[in-house]
Amino acid sequence: MFGSHVTKSTIAFLPILAALVLPANSASFQYKTAGSRATELSGLYGGEYCSPPAAYIQRKIVQRDFAEDGVSLNRFVLERKNGSRAIVNIWIHNDLSEVEMSWEKNGLQTLIRKGRTIHGTVMLCGAAGRALWLDSVR
Image 1 (spheres, rainbow, N blue to C red):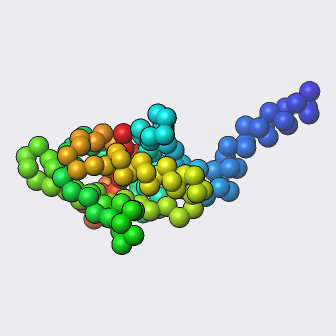
Image 2 (cartoon, rainbow, N blue to C red):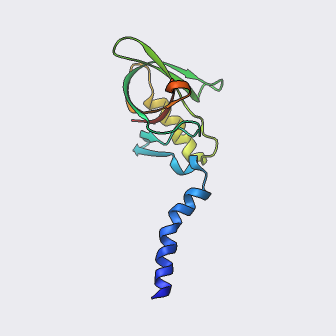
Image 3 (spheres, rainbow, N blue to C red):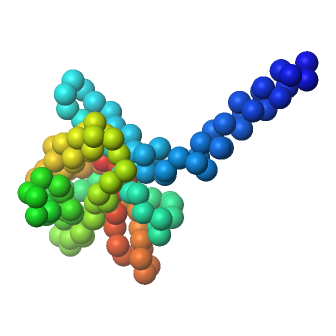
């Protein structure tokens, strides 16, 4: 009986141990697909200076900004109902597997298109939460 109790305790402790040992970004980034297309990305924000809660967004994309490579999306601009605009930054992960990086890059390119209304969450960072960082999109 004592041996089975230790095993159950050890098993219960494993998720906590994994959270302490594994890098946060690789453990939190997730994607959903339909065939060869990403339909949802989450766990996109990989920084450590913002804290939840995240804010829900449902807005129209009016502009995209790519890195010098022309492929990696750096940020995009959302238009609010009143016509004002907000910049949403995108965290570029460097600790994902090649497969995860491909899904992340392609998913961002297809889910964040000019003229499309996106649904997702942003992290509110910086002074008074004025810096927006994308955390999920569908």
